[in-house]
Amino acid sequence: MNKTNQISARRIAQILYERGWNKSELSRKLGVSVQAVQQWVGATSKPSGKNLTKLAEVSGKPEYWFFMEKDDNDSQVHQKPVAIGRALNPRQEKLLALFEQLPESEKEHMVNLFEEKVKEYDKLLKELIALKNNKI
Image 1 (cartoon, rainbow, N blue to C red):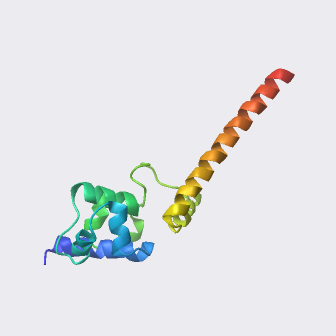
Image 2 (tube, rainbow, N blue to C red):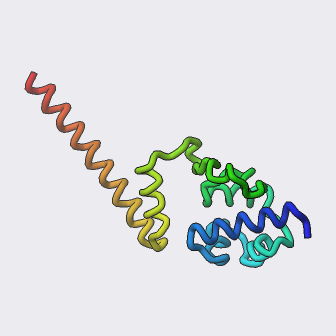
Image 3 (tube, rainbow, N blue to C red):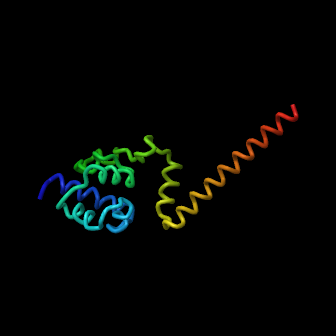
C-alpha cells in the first residue's frame, strides 16, 4: 500500500471520529460517492484536486494536514474554514461546533433566524439614528 494513501486514510478516519460522521455523511458533504470515501479510508486511493479542497473546507483542516504524519506538533495545526480565510475565535468555534451537530433541516432554520436577527438590528439602528438626528 502507498504510504501517502495510508497517511491520508488515517487522517480521514480521524475526521470521521472527531466529527462523529460516518462515511455516508462525509460523502454527502463532499458531493462524492460513498465508494470514493471508502477507498480513501481503505487507503486504496487518496483525495485530490477539488475533492481535497472540499474535504479541507468541511473539516476545517488545511489541505496539507491530510498528508502529514501524526506527531507532537499535530495539536498545533490550525483549524480554519478555508472559505473564511482566518482563524475563528473561541466563541465562533463553539457556535460552529454546535451548528454542525444539528440536523440539516434545522441548520437552514438557524441560518434564517440569524439573517432575520441581523435585519432587525439594522432596522433598529436606522430608527435610533433617525431619532437622534431629529432630537438634536
